[in-house]
Image (cartoon, rainbow, N blue to C red; front, side, top):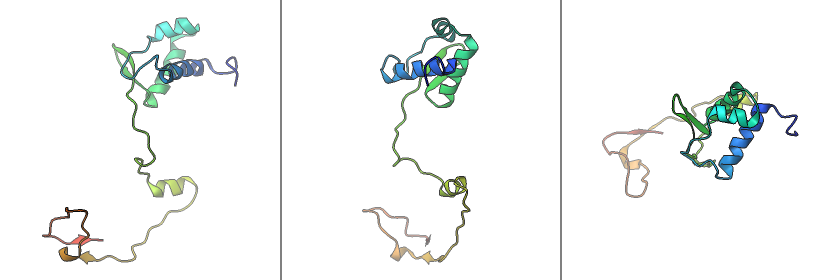
Length: 128
C-alpha cells in the first residue's frame, strides 16, 4: 500500500516503529509528544493518539499520564518460552477438543523419577 493510500495513523505507527528498529527511539526513552507528532505529520492530535494507543496496546510503548510515552523494554521472543493452551488453539481452528484420563495411579516415593540430585519430598505420593 502506498503512503497516500495508508491511513494517517498507520504512517505515524510506521514512523515510530522504524525509529525503534533503527534505534532512534531506544527502550526506556521518551518519544516526541503527541502535539509535536501531529504538527510534524500535519494531522490532528487524535490521529496521533490512535497510533500511540495501538502501539501501547501491543506492548511496544508505555504511556504515563502527565509524563509522556516511552519505548517499552523488549521482551524475550522465543517460541520455546511460549506455552500455549492447546485446547484454545484447537477450538480456534474450528475443531472440538476433548481429553480422557486413561490411567490414574498414585506412585509411591520409591518409584519417583529423579531430576539430577533433586526430587520431590519422600513423605507423599505423586499422582501421574
